[in-house]
Image (cartoon, rainbow, N blue to C red; front, top):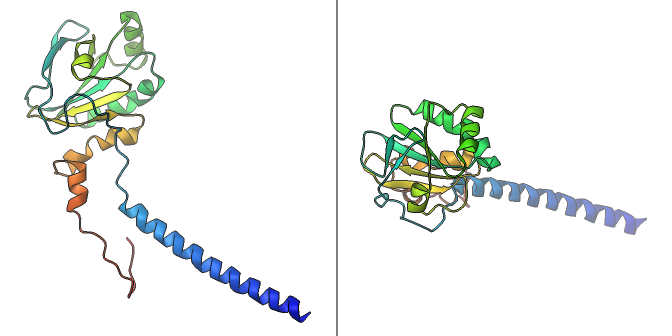
Length: 208
């Protein structure tokens, strides 16, 4: 009986120690989570580099009107590369339309695709893109060296490529605008400019 009591006491001691260890780990996870950068668009190392002059190209939209890409202008320009056969592209269209509406005073959104015009027209009708600038042709995609879809590129008013990457989610899409909103050259520069958390190993710290 005495051995059983001792083993029970030891088990309780171990359980309490384990509980404290778990609490410590949970706190550390919280600290690490606060330091992790937002998940951004997945950059592909092809074509012009971010923060360099965007390639300049002119292509006709689906009505035959010329659209300039990479030139300085009055607004920023968001290029969204899509395909009628890409389900993820279609799932992001409501978010793209929402951004276009919210930032209409400072952002021009251009949809860029290639391939069968009937399929393009069906996509435009289904997702009500009639009023959007929609370019069909390979010129822009080849100039910007676009491979996988959906892909987006953000060009500022001076004609500088500010962000680019695969955009598989609304979070990726929003991350393209982080650099502009944070008023830093790059998202990495913003993160490096922030004060680092101090080590409060000898005192109490309060997490925000």
